[in-house]
Length: 227
Image (cartoon, rainbow, N blue to C red; front, side, top):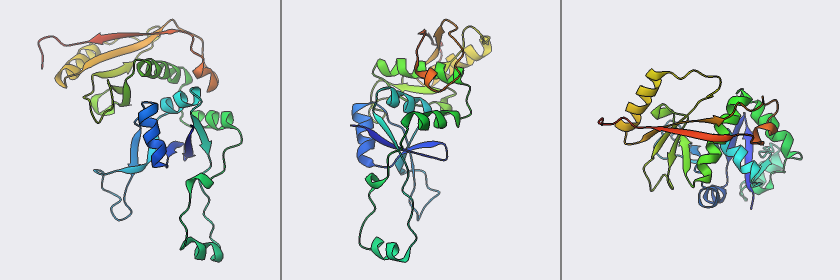
């Protein structure tokens, strides 16, 4: 069963609650709920649909052939349509499927304004973690790219703060290494520095990001005697 995803303003959104359940149960993807109540748009405690997916999650679902990009419903402002709207509920399934899924993916990825080599690296890390059965969520609040959970985030505490590094082009800052280890240990986690074994080739298109050429290497850092 494919998940219907709408790309609106460069953001991948899932509007169907049943699709959100399938994502969580069958694909191990939690996403981030972003919907608020019209009467309280500034509250952030009880969020609902739509569910926002990050680029890595969209690429993973596309590679698994589990996603279908759809057009958002266009409102009909005619008088007859307004009268009918009082008696029926719009169905998200009525939206027409995008004719060219590959084109939509390419346009979506290019709209993120991210370096494709960096995206390739983070996607390889994301996919490696997913293959281990872990959930991932954005890790900005802990100073990382991702935080990793051994199961559903509603049931488990996160185990890893994941940062990515180009081992062949980026310098390794020892101060960053110390700060990452101290932060992770202080929050009862482990700091994971991940990259690719080999420089690989420069990526020029979004679809090349899916062509894995190198193995992922991870180094875990734990600050002994701290926290």
